Amino acid sequence: EGGALTDFVVDYVFGSVIDFHRDARRGDRLGLVFTRRYLGSRFIRYGPVLLARYEGQVTSQLGIQYKDPIGIAEYYDANGTSLERLFLLKPMQFRRISSKFNRKRFHPILKRNMPHLGTDYAAAPGTDVWATARGLVTVAGRNGGYGKMVEIEHPNGYRTRYAHLSRILVRKGQRIRKRDLVGQVGSTGRATGPHLHYELIHNGSQIDPRSVNRGDEPRRLSSSYREAFEQRKRYLASLLDDSRHAPPQVVADAARRPPAALTAP
Image (tube, rainbow, N blue to C red; front, side, top):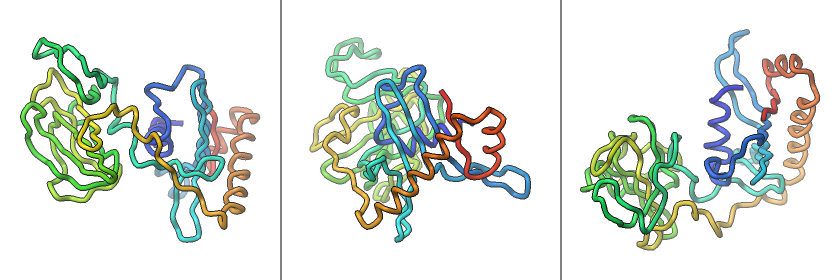
């Protein structure tokens, strides 16, 4: 039903809990219940994704949008546990990982073994880069071989670095929310081509970004909201299940009226 919906699910709904680069497999299924905005009969844009169900060979997850009576909207799993974690699993949309975290990598420019204490994401110049967690910008400028770089200080002793940027979109001292844009991909500093060098630092030492969120205790929905949450979950799941058994034209017609449900391999 379009790349916009898929990107939203990958980057927002499951952005902290599923590593789609590592865990996705051919034949995995994604089902969505979503809304569409119209002006008269003219489609304007997609509205909220109300439910996302990923059924994979490596991992499976359910995400249900629920707004509590206070007005806080968040995605929860089937047990009412928030899908938000301290960090997102990636800082951008990318073509491929060109170099992983490796303490003994052969450096392509210096021609010798030296630690590569981050992850390199290959992408087109100008691709947006976002903060993987909330925090305070402590560096926003040129920094030697890193080229144009942003560094953000996060809670619990964490910092992140975003290097080789073509443009910096934040300033030192600025407060940043998760998913705020911080820069754009480039090849400044010691780089062989356009990519983002991303580092995750904990208590002064670089760690493998793939280990992030381990041990993170997610928030659980208050017991006073559970009955309403369960009712919403059953209703949205029934819309999705019904779409699986409907003829293609019925599903296509439903997609023109909110809420719509689609399932695709």
